[in-house]
Length: 311
Ligand code: PMV
Image 1 (cartoon, rainbow, N blue to C red):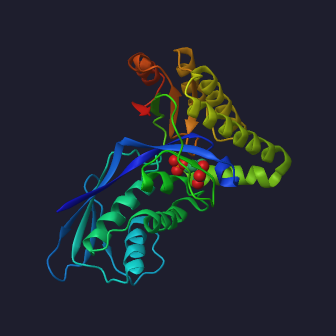
Image 2: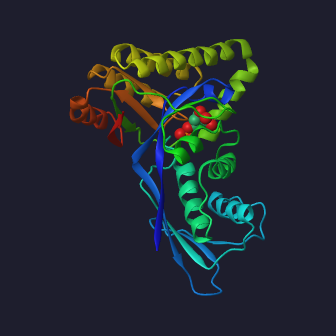
């Protein structure tokens, strides 16, 4: 029995604009993990995927070539890439990553499952091959994903990501501490990405300008992260990024309120993270602020918070 895992991810700057070719910055968030255990099954029983928490039970065959289930699709992609038939194997999933929370849950589960299955077939997928297969599953979840989630989750490195280019990693000049906040509202990234697309199509001049402004802000944020000194300035960039995301219609009253609470309690800055209209937020803080800020955020309706260090 072997366990394979993949972490959640947090987008620090640039979500949504990244779909339009602007850069974004993201990092793995290893406190939250998807894990898949592979156990040999009796001969003739075929390939099953079980959900430890939710009683999910799926059987994988190669017969259906248009599965609407992302887990079956992920398993089929591995079998096809390796030219294999389904083995007699049980894959059991466990994940503490909130679904629809902007943490890349789908990509993390796919990556862990594909690692487990490919390893059981004697050919552990890594790096580029795994990244490209996880991206294909992301297309089923999201429609037109930029590729940032699968890249961060597969390589488990902070990235400065531009769609269609090889991901760059970057230097962190001084450790940064973020409070990661689950807003408690689950939201569909496919829907928020489509909502931004509709706005952009209807008024390219206006929304294209907002998207370019986000891109410029991400480039400044990278410089500040690399220099590692001006936390106030970096926090201001987070606030500005949040305001631009609101202008793209992907914030919500609840997310705006949670950001306001974080700033009022002394965070350097706060923004939504990921698809928006729910999901997660991040606040840049001094680590000793975490207990007080977490309590205030929970009182304002946040579901959970975690401290994340970027070093
Ligand atoms: O909601 P998440 O965590 O999957 O993040 C999506 C990030 C977007 O920029 C909104 C979409 C994308 O494909 O990059």
